[in-house]
Length: 337
Image 1 (cartoon, one colour):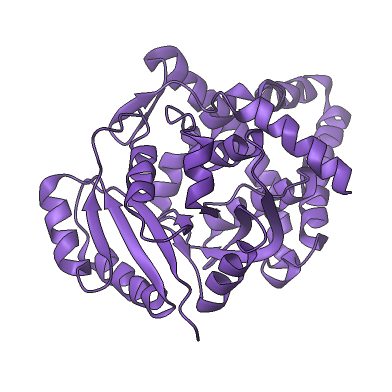
Image 2: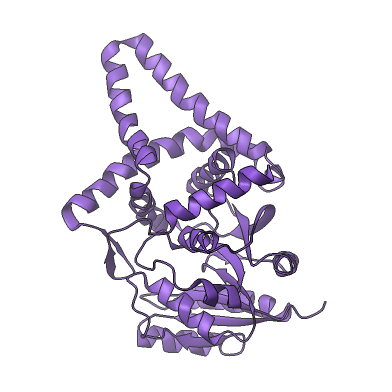
């Protein structure tokens, strides 16, 4: 297999060192390194954690601290800009710490960068504890309702294109999609690779629970979507006040509609190769969870004025490029359809 001549960029942060996680990541870094990528980990962890990570990974990656000349509220974005400035290659694969490429998917992404400046693949979850099945259902609903598919935790881009486009809004929670919309607004060519799937490891249950209000908070700038989730508990309450018939109609609607959307996403492209059919049954539970989490996020907004992330308080879910960048994407996708 020929070397891919790319940089695999991982922004990383942990409050505490985990020997088992460090060992698992070292094995993964070895796989990426063997595929011919430079592995570049930009670590914003406290000094004792940074040192132990460095000891665990020194054979398999280039391990660097965050450059503090970058001062965005979302420190992950500071790590990304640090990595871009240090990258040895023009082709860069950016990934969250729960993303797991294979040698084949690395090759496909890098090959796609020969014709595009940005590649945005899709994720699938494995393994699948019950809470991950809710997340998998969400992914399928997004595939059904969004022309460009679900929001992944990874993308690839040309370093030169990133530098030319300039910095994107780094004071937001939803940075994974903000960077894509920033690229689109600046005329960068994007491959929305709807059938290129990259595995994502599900979080442990405690971490998943912590993420519930954060993901709902990220949507606060999407007013119609947020209003819908705010309204669902009120609709249920109204149905209970109307009697058995109203309750039955409401419950059937809230069960069938999300499941139908998830089924549509499952049938789109090659999703059925990566998602179990039974995942669609968890779609109503995800809708219920998101409705409750939206009220939980509202608590953070009213009491704290933002959401804590990486030791900082972020008040914005989405940033300045979201709407204009999204409009550019919509126009291009319609033209290509």
